[in-house]
Amino acid sequence: MQQGASADIREPEALRGSSIVAQIRASRIEFVVSVPDITTSEGLLRPLSEGTTPRLIRICKEDEGVGICAGLAYTGRRSLLLIQQTGLLDSINAVRGVAVEYGLPICMMVGLLEKEPSVPPTQSRRYGVRIIEPILDAMGVDYHEIEGDVDVAKIGPAIDDAYAKSRPVVLLIGRRPLG
Amino acid sequence: MMKRDDCLKVLARHVTDLDIVLPVYSAAFAWIDIRPHPLNYLSHGAMGLASSHALGLALGRPDRRVIVLDGDGSLLMNLGSLVTIAAEAPPNLYHFVCQNGTYEANGGHPIPGRDRVDFAGFARSAGYRTVHEFSDLTIFEQQIGPLLSETGPVFADLKLASGGPQERDYTRLHGLHVRRAFREALAAS
Image 1: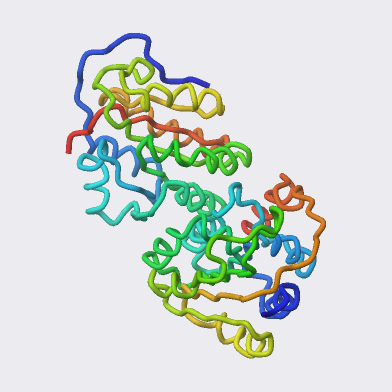
Image 2: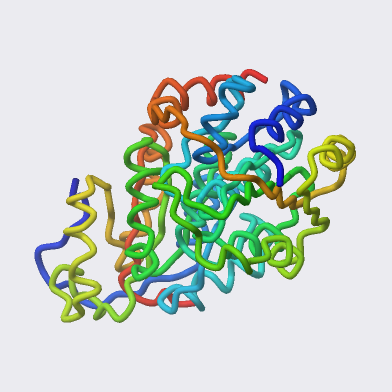
């Protein structure tokens, strides 16, 4: 299921929050459901919170968001769960049951807390970062690394694919997007 | 104290063919026998998430009443959802908790704080628009109609006696056919 892992350490490059927001809007996401994440806080959540579309739903705990996105999916409304990888870890059972076993298009954008820029997640010195992709592999959940602006173009097709196939996808934000 | 099935039978008389109902665990097994309907949303995937699924449905289909029949143990797993729901304030969401003080579907063990916990107080503090408590079936019967006409989010604590044994075939809640029927019914209506 691995779709985005990089074999080599890449050169640093910019990642602009505005590019990600544009992709989210272009993907017909109507709701962003979020617990704040320090990686995406300023470059992504802040500008999203200042707009009216997509509608921002602030939640108390990440697994709530899995349920909310599932309910929205049944109504034909697209949503994106914007969280930190610690929240993803906390929500594994919800992702297992709701997204994977039920086969629902739960789209998650996950900031990788303290991942070193340009270092592939599996090569991070941070245990909490290193384990994410192997866990997603074990669960059979598709994921994509979003490390620089060149990766942003993956977002739209990944979301479209999740809805077309009715299956979850995780977009791993590997560095703080610029505001 | 009310008997769960009596309470659900009263509620069922006020639920229309357009309403979406999300019953949980013991209430779910009772409800699908009392009121089988494709717009029963039964597959919550993980304990505690029914109220969150309900919020998504309520936001996505503001033209429908969305009625959650939560469990007390389930709600304790997702108390934050009370705050989230109150903040989003969907006018079409009706959140009942079946408070019997036990994890009835998991061996009948008591919930933490069963003699002290105040679910109505939680909902009130979270900011639900209206909060009710019922322990008398006659009063519930008198008030349930008007309650379901109130602007949501509405919370109602149903104080119930523990139910008896149930046959629990979980494929009736989680089976693919259940989810498919719901999806098709919602899309068609």
